[in-house]
Length: 319
Image 1 (cartoon, one colour):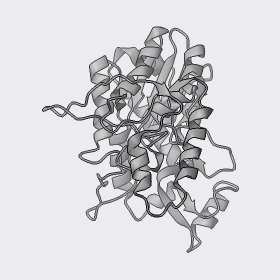
Image 2 (cartoon, one colour):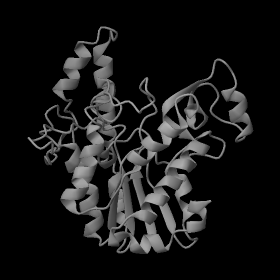
Image 3 (tube, helix red, strand yellow):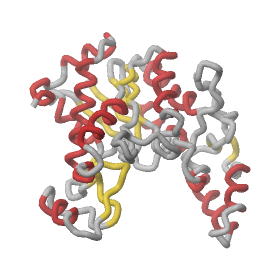
Image 4 (cartoon, one colour):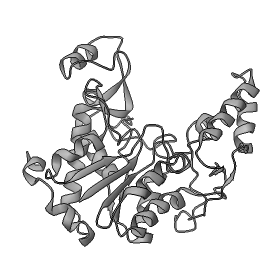
């Protein structure tokens, strides 16, 4: 049995000397040795960019009947963040209906010469950037780097593709091969409210009650796809750890990010000028998140995960 992973920096593999880690690199630890984990996740990728760059097609070429495809995209899709990654990463949810259900709007491919007008407008309104044309040229260079003649662009109203539609492409691709798609909600960012709860705000998975997490859950229900709610698991975990101690489990934003683990990490963390971040995890944090994911797999009632559950090393989950 093979497990394929599609995702971003929260999922990807890192080197042994890097303090930062993703849950994908620790996932094999919780499975029997005959389970192969192929991690295609890459930092900075959204569901849309993953497809535009051809990473989606790499999985499509290799996945086989009976394999599993785990899909986690959110951090880079979140369109409530700054506009500067709009042209390549951001994916809008689209307007929800009266029941709060976000739409599934099919993607529309365009020429690689196309730059979203919303991006151009935001760039022109950015007084901090003097040479606008140089920025536009760099955007066109990114577009040209895609391996196909056309690409899926950003659209403010999601008319050229909504978040749920892009996630659905991964579900459909897996099922085309008689493989089993599994959706994973993204871990929370470690921003805390004054009362110690995890903050819901723009840039923290969309704001308005974590809209991107809700959208991922919705597409799971709509397509009868198992959803492992790693987000809710992480919220409980982070709130238990607390604001004052969470930096022991997160990556370093300003400071040295490589060395001998854990000795050099602890030395770096003790420096007054070191700044921890609120998105990525260090090796201890990633292991906690991965253990949580393994627990969610084990506890899942969906029969599609039975074979996966039988391959888990339950003693490593309980230790």
